Length: 170
Image 1 (spheres, rainbow, N blue to C red):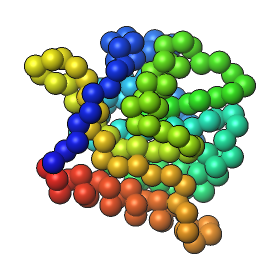
Image 2 (image 1 turned 120 degrees about the horizontal axis):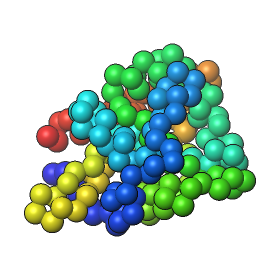
Image 3 (image 1 turned 30 degrees about the vertical axis):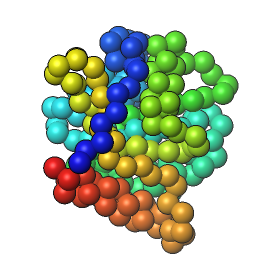
């Protein structure tokens, strides 16, 4: 049974983040606006890949980007399987208020306590209440125990396992 839980994203889901929507980094399209990512998710029928990061301070986040996200295998997999959403928690720069609110709301909803954390999920509207709900599929982090230089292999195997389990539950 799919686990749905409500999210209190009053501002984040009702008001689109106007200042920043998407950015192309290292050949990947990363959304920063959940609503824009959700539109793409619905259009393509791909889940959202929510990457919780501290872009200007998190060493493990940088390591994940270098060891996994920069690899051709990940880029190909991401283009075929998910919509990328970066949820940043910088320390040395200030995000626009609406973006910071959105990211904080999602951090609370997913109970993220460390970085990097990745959640694969969909956003579903409850037809009766018009509330937006998150349908979490599973979470990932840095691929611990991976063969050095092949971190993307373990990461993608773990991600594919989450997607396969979610598909089997449908």
